[in-house]
Image (cartoon, rainbow, N blue to C red; front, side, top):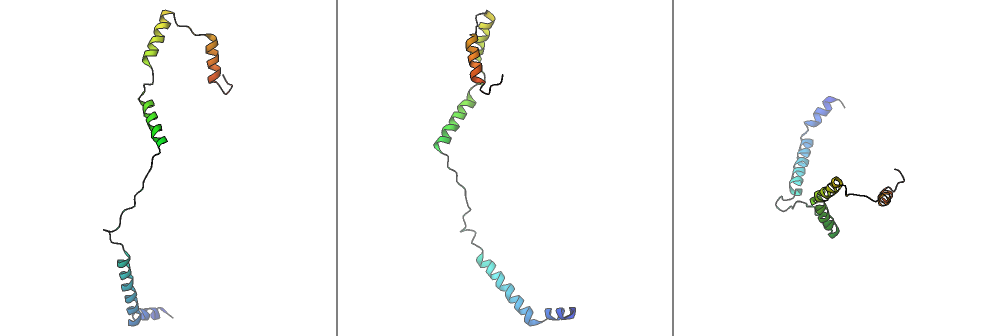
Length: 106
């Protein structure tokens, strides 16, 4: 079949009519299969927060609200250092250093 044969089939009223019927059926299906926009509810996500998570959030807020530096304690130690009355036990200092250094490195 040559190009003329293809063009001949396109002009065939039987084939054109069948194509038109299929097209109209497809359009009818598309319009009937679409849901009514008024009846469709949008999907929504929900989240539940556990009591433990709420408690953790409260604790985090308390930590964030606390000042980074306890100015009153720093002022007291600075005054004792300047007065010469501040002393640290070498044994206590060594013990605390060993407790905080758990990886064995100094």
